[in-house]
Image (cartoon, rainbow, N blue to C red; front, side):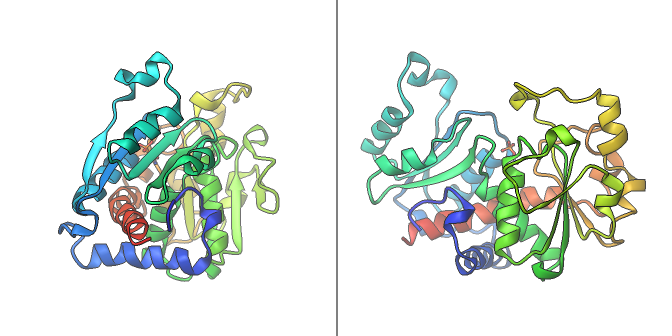
Length: 299
Ligand code: CP
């Protein structure tokens, strides 16, 4: 695997291999350094803010013994008008051979096309379309609770329209054979590109007997052309609270990619409750990213 930029580039067997690799890192020394990337240099280029993705790629790379360069883009020459391609080619010329890139625009295919054969590009989030490493860690977290994807009912709730997590999770769930995916949101936050997936505006109906509930944040930074109803109305109809969670299966897990808007899409008691696996997702993020980097290194 030279690059890791979309889930759609993977077949089920490749995806299952990544899941197995990630679980192995957890089972056999998640915290122990494995020098699979010794002598390699990884640069993180984040054109949007991040806590979890950037930190976990850095930790993953360091645990695999890579040199890591975190570019501070606020102080980089992109501020003087340098193009993304020029930035990447200059860093590649210095010996960077792994790029972890987050960008607002659809740029991954273009960047992948200008890299040398030995250089790897890993998406850390691309506009509203792709967040493949989040999908891997999400599937790992689901698999740890519910190993048979084909029997699962998964509800994804919130700002579907602007969510790259929803799109990549849907691709991954389908790849793993999940038959029952429900997208729950107000009408104006549904996504017309997600044809063939069940949309539901009534959260109570959508949550009925779900095994997995994935909550999403309202992405105000992407809402250029959409108005949401008042915050109070959104909370009334789409906040996950204990009463709503009780409509899902008793052993349902609650997920959220983060960052959480506490008190908006989810109440504190649910976010921090016994059914929440939100911090497990963050923890699994390191192993998932170790799996991605080591699969690229083996290419
Ligand atoms: N889930 C996620 O992408 O979080 P960050 O924006 O903090 O990386």
